[in-house]
Image (cartoon, rainbow, N blue to C red):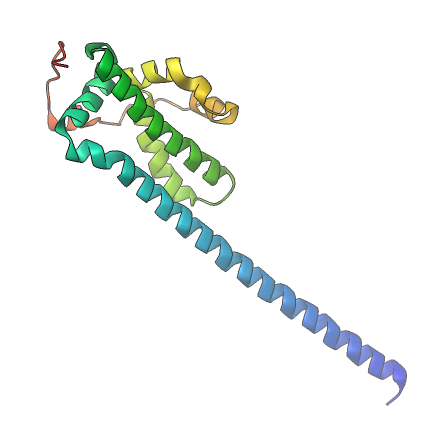
Amino acid sequence: MNWVALGAIGELLGAFAVVGSLAYLATQIIQNTRAIRATTTDTAVRGLRDWIRPLIQDAELSRIFRLGIEDWHDLDSDGKARFFHMMLGFMKTLENLHFQYQKGALDPGVWAGWEYLMTGYIQSPGGQAYWEHRQLAFSADFRSYIAGLPPNENFARVAQLTGEVLEKTARL
């Protein structure tokens, strides 16, 4: 065997090594992407649990949120403040999830569920009032995204699901 043949064999083996390395790298990237998406989804669920836990545990907070979503004008000043704080936590969580989705760290199917929930609440009377007063607390990209959302007419809020008739005068 001459040097030219050995050189060709070496180049061929080198090419196989490069292809193998690229295949391994691609597999690692896919696995890493899956792990990031799983972690982001888990963080999102924990964020919602942390946000909603006080509403579940405190009937008064739950009532404030239900009243606030339907018509925040029915709340007194303390109720309005608590409602706005609840909405800030909710919307900041969703802004973060939207950012993660845009960066590819949140699965599109998972984001679709969050988007459905967010759209239903932000388009409610109280959600619109909140957004009118607080949208500048959010990134320009997120504000633009919210402005372009189509109407979510199929979303039933908690008061609608339970058949609750909301009081027009708040007891707060």
